[in-house]
Image (cartoon, rainbow over all chains, first blue to last red):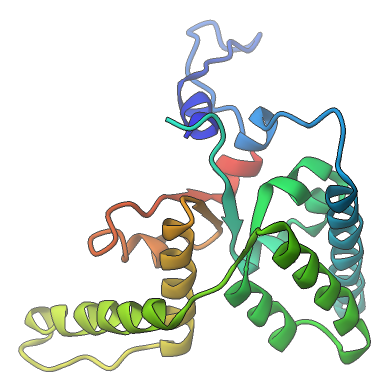
Length: 63
Length: 151
């Protein structure tokens, strides 16, 4: 489970943290994007965007 | 150790992080879609006008082999697991069998956990405690919090 392990073990030293305390890297940042998508993958991306647009619309309607 | 381990989003991830998912193409193609999560979204959140959009997503994931659906064995094993959890609590309730609170939600979470584990995925959820209770009966279950995943 590479992403989780990387997130758990990588450290970042922020400017304000001289002690170098561990800061977890979010897993989403460790996911490597593909350079090229297949037709099905492109369709999946578009379908997911459309579905998330629906959820956005629902959320806005509730506010 | 596999180079990449796929993941399943719980329903609460979709309803909380929809903007992030919308804007990240990598998530769309690397996630596995649970039929149980889709059921929860469609049954509780989606209006009839928008049903076709989720139907399309379901069909595409099915075609892509990334739709995770419990089969008859999963239902049986999940029922036994929840039964064990329920009766395992007897000792702490002085021999009485405690009533299951939110039984339907517990069942859905257990089905998501089981099918994700069998598909070698980890579960990303806001309610890690709800899933952690299954770990004793499902040792391979891996649960990741929304903050660990999204930061």
